[in-house]
Length: 372
Image 1 (cartoon, rainbow, N blue to C red):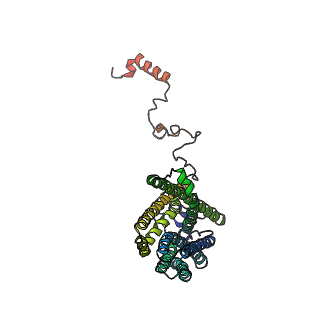
Image 2: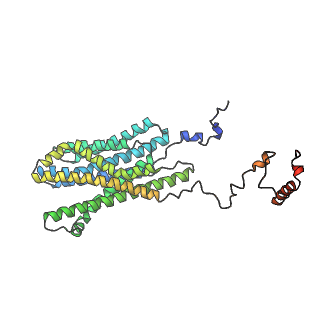
Image 3: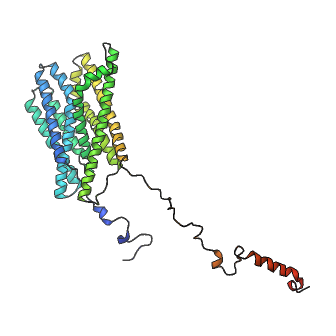
């Protein structure tokens, strides 16, 4: 086979041919993540059921259902993504990395989680007008979360699930610190002081949640990279966009959960807002607070993950730096007089010989000019 001009042969190419068929990195610990996410979803469903059951039938149950719906939807998103990620690892290990098979497996995993959650809600909750809304919206959220896990970069999805799960747990645990923070930010008897303190408490919660999300995403990706290198030293390294997506992933999931709530749970929110003017104001305020929290977690998490990734990079060496003992380029230049015969070497001639010749010509002008 002849070589085409301007194209290196296959054996001498800088890019090995094996790179074309490299398999994507799996998400380590996907099974553990799936179990933790399912456990968190079960805890959210149980706490919502307890709150609705303990309340009186009617308007109070509707209001509590609207308040508990965001936590259930967020947990369903994370659980669907975690189960789909674990199923995708299993299918890739057994049948190879096929895009169609990976997407079908992810959708199937999300559907299993959504179906199980909907059945549990219908069997354990009271048969009210809000039960079917909660069940249907939860099932839809689990399927959407499973579809998100069909991406080819499995470690990044695993980092998003890890960071989102840690963020949701932190938000619930942070509720115990709200009262001391209200006093710290100057909450008093006036309405203005309460509103101002509530804003600062919400911003503090979002800021800390974003930092935690970015650190968890970076830690998971670093662990996944080290584990992949131990198994295969030639495993491809993740670039900075993977860390950016992983850090911003929890905030994106929170915003996506808000979209699902406002679309699928619109009837429940309208029922809760129609109870009284105070309930309408509370629902509007809570919706705005959830959107702000998602935006804060998105940007702070992405920035934290990128900063943590940037600190691991080594400084780049300049290409134009020359070693100190390199020979001078002027000394390596060839003398043009060596290649051209008859070239006048004005700088090589002895100045004394040049002056003697000039004096000899001047002493005997007849020899210098025969015509005289």
